[in-house]
Image (cartoon, rainbow, N blue to C red; front, side):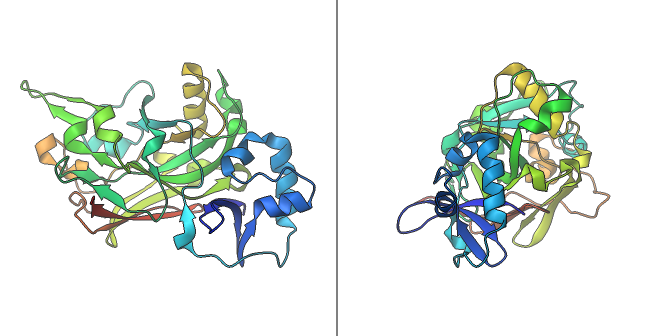
Length: 313
């Protein structure tokens, strides 16, 4: 499996390929093979399919060249130029929040400045909100520019996949109206400091034959809060890429977050007019993240984020 990560070292960030016995310095191996010695995942993606294919052959035949590593050394694998988030994309999440299924893809943007690494702390500001939440999502990394691509061709524009935690502050996202309705403010509820843990690495698309088979889960201090699969999503990866490419030209290195299954704390927040129900899979609803708790967002076949929510100093 090709897992491309970014590690912090004394010499600065290093692009590595994570293998069973350690981590391979990508720039070092590419240089030895006479290929461009790109030192960041952003630069690697920009190199295009010719570089990816050549590099894949080089990295797969390397033996005995791995360096020791520790997951605590991982930082965010890339710094995306844009983060496009798919809203309202899982049936059970719509039911728990009392929403009807939309007739088209919903989306909003997170600022790239919100990205943090797979083991970084999420710094909470108690004066800003007491309703910090979590949402495990599949991150889709664009590899080739995409504009008005058909669904059948959409996967050819995907470089790879990662895990995203769409951290949300719900009392800023959802505003209750006096007539019994509510409206959303996604800018204020979704884009704030440390709102986008991302990683732990990027698994290249050739390793994921069918993204609809990927399973997602979230635990808070070990308690299972979310459990779902991409085949329960209303719009799959090709649908999302094709739709967003009809709105704007998707650029290499951009990330699409594909929406979250049911189970965020919002789903049990009656103050914000959620409609709690007992899940058929046995997952029980829990409250908002408390100071010091560790949220683990995992996608089988890709990896996991483990972020502690702490008070900002």
